Length: 110
Image (tube, rainbow, N blue to C red; front, side, top):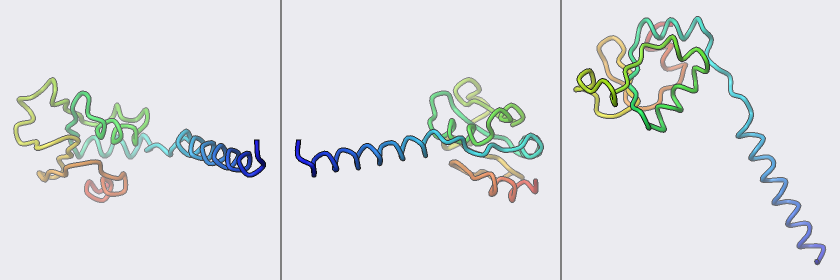
């Protein structure tokens, strides 16, 4: 094997290792206090099998249990006004798509 080929392989392996480290790095989760506050002031509409809903829920870590969630797959009658998931209902307004914790805190006053 030529030296340049070996160097290219090593570079590729290093890049892949870096990508894995970044992907597997634990993300900061939302505190229990903030999750409870958002859960008291907002409703999160999700749906079984929704990838973006999973992303939104993972932002809360184990504190996702404090959110006021409605799963539109099981509770379709409560989702008549929902155009897609995830959707947040805050102060009578609907916000479609994944929202940052900072945005949710701003909208809820938490």
